[in-house]
Length: 243
Ligand code: MN3
Image 1 (cartoon, rainbow, N blue to C red):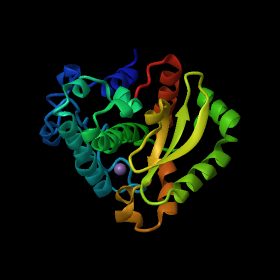
Image 2 (cartoon, protein in one colour):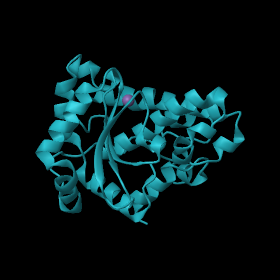
Image 3 (cartoon, rainbow, N blue to C red):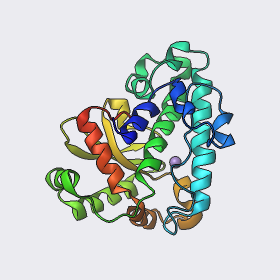
């Protein structure tokens, strides 16, 4: 297993002591704040890595406050339900109907938020450009080519009323599809795998772009890490992609 796929595999494990074990010395205090099985991993790069397209203050607030809050509230939601605390997040999200009703909404919103943002940080921090190799071929085959795909992705983001996400899903056979979800919902809730996605909540862009969501959607492509997306694509086809 590569280091990357190992990280993704671990990110989906509830209560995995291995997650903390390798990172304890580098883990910022905020990540220790939430008690419970689910952990906030540090950003894999500095807050300013996505400048000037995504400003450092937005990155800091988005990760350290918004994402941290989802993790904290997810831990609160599962705290009285030991059977949930021992399950991988993707398994919980794929079976929301079996989550106890008193915490189902909290698990949906905050578990979805944890999964979505864990994916989001991984696929950013890059230099944009264009995908290559098998991934580029799959985009040509399933999504009409890169330029047409980008246009459709941006349109889906602009059309998402209120808060939500735009995703590209991937099957174990490597087939891609464009989709969107409201709030913190994720295709993981439908038993699908997420290749990558973009956050169109206002908290993702408001400080720099205010109401101009379309400008944010355009700029975001400049920070996509295509090497990481390609690794996720390979992991999906190898059966090791979880979140
Ligand atoms: Mn967000």
